[in-house]
Length: 341
Image (cartoon, rainbow, N blue to C red):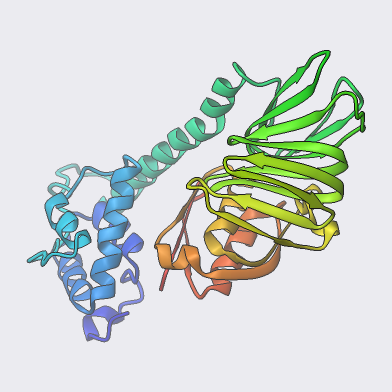
């Protein structure tokens, strides 16, 4: 982003994430720190990027809270004085042998890999382990699973999803604990079939329908037939191609879609039409065995339209970033950062 002659070196970092890695690898390189100072002073967008990447790495547990007071003041909109001139990650190594850059590079790779692996292990293994205590069926990252229920109805689970099944003499009930599922129901008027998710109950009236639990709430979409949806201050019916989304604060959105696009993930496709980029990223996360960080609410709120292939989540995320003119940075094989330019 710079124009100064000092910034013309092809090995000079251009982004905050690249500066973070470079300064960590060579903490005693005075010339590198001087070029970092130039880059930081070139515009407020550089300072903002640096503040965000420090915050992101502290949250991930990858760095100590360096210059925390300064970036907290910056984030609160107060004059921050002198923003961090460098991360201050200690003194040059006194060891001899391998070149310092190689040693530091390998150490940094190890730190990043260890942090990413630990985070990924927590993401991949801990939730399913806890869910298994409550769930009758779970899926892992990128896994789809088809389950035949006791009455012959079919539940098809998306990745990182979990359901609890409860059949009695009076009702057939499934609780969606996490993720998404598509149900093809054997209709029995004398024995209601319902799916509960996030405080919302969807009752079959002879249909095939999808239920999804998202960070922002619960969504129901109908491919065939009719369902009744009951929730806080809500009772309505949905027919083929209709969908409804219930937010965490009681907000409701609803609309119509091509019935053939309901649960398109069963065909390996994520189809979005004028949906926030943040929602697309949330839909792709369960297909990626790693961490995806979407930086900036403005970017998360931008609408996106397209067809994305869940079988190749890295390419899909890169395409989503490209469609928004955003930066796509793969910090490690297990970590992707999408950020505004």
